Length: 483
Ligand SMILES: Cc1cc2nc3c(=O)[nH]c(=O)nc-3n(C[C@H](O)[C@H](O)[C@H](O)COP(=O)(O)OP(=O)(O)OC[C@H]3O[C@@H](n4cnc5c(N)ncnc54)[C@H](O)[C@@H]3O)c2cc1C
Image (cartoon, rainbow, N blue to C red; front, side):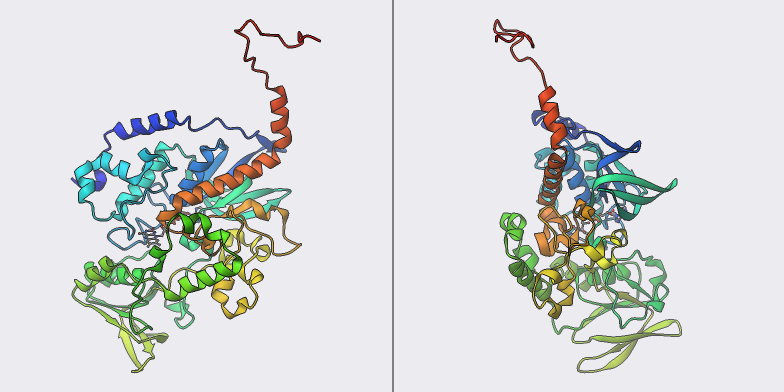
């Protein structure tokens, strides 16, 4: 039986219910409901129902903040890259990572896998197939009863007298919501979109070229020759996928003379990096992030072996692409390096990754000019414009103001995606840190709501009158206290 289609035994869901019961989770909602001119105000809108959106929403609900909505552009089961643009066979990370489990053992990936396929299958599992990871995330959404609204794409977040007005495209047309806080858990592309190199004309898209992280129908590439610019994991995955689906050849053109050898990302995980990154000074974080960008990561060895097994695969090192042009039905690349030349291919995949720059986040267009970047904090940052563009966030992922003219609502926006990496480490980028990020953002929002609601909460305490001693001889009814 296909591992991803086997049904759950039901035992795990009973265990989840029991675990939550043992922990008294979730607590009742404690945030007083608010409305403005008759319109209900949500305490939090989480944008994106991928693993970070799940972690944020789950952690909020487990802190008694349940007047929330999770808005997801895609349909159920298609969140994130796993079923669309992730073209590897399995996840790159180890199977033992707990996932966005909110610290509860029965919500871990391993618990889910053992329940579905048995402990022997867990032992036999090497790495997690993409579709299986997606199934697990969909299961989490369901058992945590997260209030996800699918098919809802957020297009704008605007300040509105101390609140945030969220505009979204929905199946019923445009709608707006009022929220106190917005968490943008919008994934890798959510912090600035994709990188497209200036030397490749945009007019080649889509009939002759595409960015590696875009959806691509490989069927028309059958029997054709593919060029890929780049040597990161996605470059290899795209080449391998094309060959597996019948392409005649796939060639990677790489500027460097060899591949990076060490995955420093793996070397910079663990509690100290996840919880301690923002204990470092801005200068230390700048140096560390610059180092991580410079050393680059190698593709996983499994990815390399997958491509090398396929007939028609080749890689050319020391061959920077200087330009590209259309010639008939083909794309011609001008290569530099020691042997400059031109090469013609039937199709081009540009594997140049993701950008981090708030000026390219459409939902944040109103706030981006006012949001602090590393370039505002580090002297001489102009020497590294790529790093200078990274947002400089507060510890709860909140945007910080650049100057006095920033809207006061700015800090109600929490950028819980890859854009947070330079400020807070890789806690909302990859799977190893996902639990830390969910907890962090929920804790920060809890503290903000506690401050905002303190008068009402204090008043509620004054009115709290549950008589503890009613059943004892020492009970004194209210108003009958001895003078
Ligand atoms: C190809 C690929 C492979 C990866 N492999 C690994 C790996 O093996 N191990 C690892 O640790 N990490 C991996 N990562 C990194 C990381 O784990 C993933 O990017 C992961 O998907 C991040 O989760 P997320 O919730 O932040 O974003 P996503 O999973 O991308 O979810 C974001 C969601 O937000 C939605 N969204 C975006 N904008 C809007 C909007 N305006 N309105 C409404 N909804 C919106 C999207 O539809 C999407 O479903 C990989 C990343 C990629 C791209």
